[in-house]
Length: 141
Image 1 (cartoon, rainbow, N blue to C red):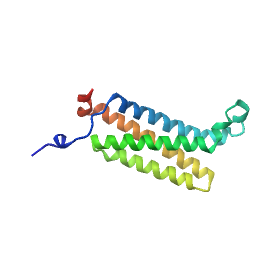
Image 2: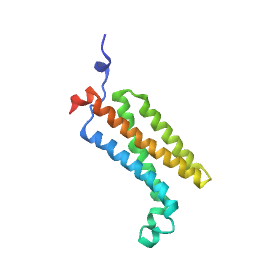
Image 3: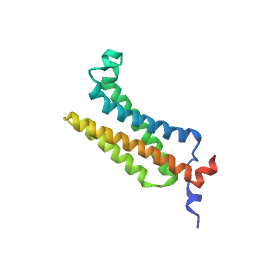
Image 4: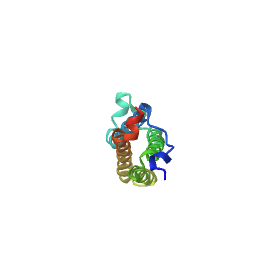
């Protein structure tokens, strides 16, 4: 009978794959910081030339890019490590972000989107940890 690793046709992680998790975690945390800071700094940003940061399109770009990176990276990581925790974090984060964006209450939107972005960052960090401690991933280096 073939072992689980013999049946796995998942690609081995590369330095680029680990970088995606690092970048994705940073981008998710930047998104969370943006969501928290924008309501507080809304009146100050135009005076320092950063009024564009309060624009809805910046938030949409940050959230969209964070979600795309997370889906790619965490699904790839699941294919290698088979740890459902990463997919649970991705699912919970996506639900929170969508719920926040659909919420008519600004305070609820900020709380949900920030929590979702933090969960995305946590998923990336967990995926990176799994890669750093995985024998299959270590063999690829």
